Image (cartoon, rainbow, N blue to C red; front, side):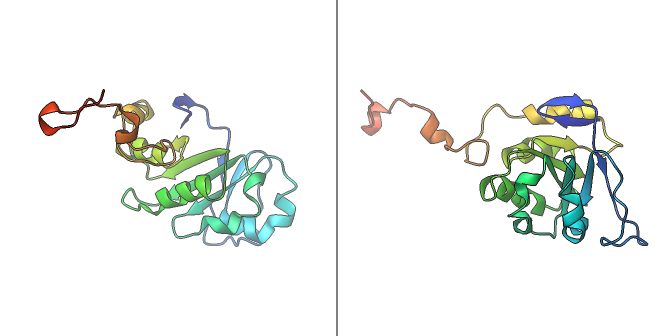
Amino acid sequence: MIIKNRTIVADEWTVLRLSEQDSPETVAVPAGKVIVPLQVWLQQRDALQQRSEIGVWLATDERPEVLKEDVDKFSVIAVNFPKFSDGRGYSIAYNLRTRLGFSGELRAMGDVLRDQLFYMQRVGFDAFAPRPDRSIEDALKGLSDFSDVYQTSFDQKQPLFRRVQRKGNPAAGLIDE
């Protein structure tokens, strides 16, 4: 199960992870909806781009710009968070959405905790695969922890002070008429 568009749904995708014996050039990618590591995509691009149901996942030390020419080929791109304290995935998501124009499913996976989901959606994630040892129902609640945001991001282009009309303080000489 994953959270997608603020709803708990069955995960239709398989995430391919390489073992120590596997190499990106030769690993067999199973049939069906598969999210492959970036290195597998780069090494097997010619064969994989023929498939209509292929996704790619990035580690936090990989650059999303390498997908610049291919971003429209994926219906899902995932970012793997190896530990909750690794914030590089937030920048990867933001860049995929704003600089590369990715409009498909953007999934956060790995060590994804409830406390992070609200902030992850702010930078463009719309799907979340929380840790299996945590309650997915509780994680879903993390998407609505706050009712409004102050600063701009992918999900809100205007800061709060530009979105709220305020009456001035007459004592300070600030009066809106």
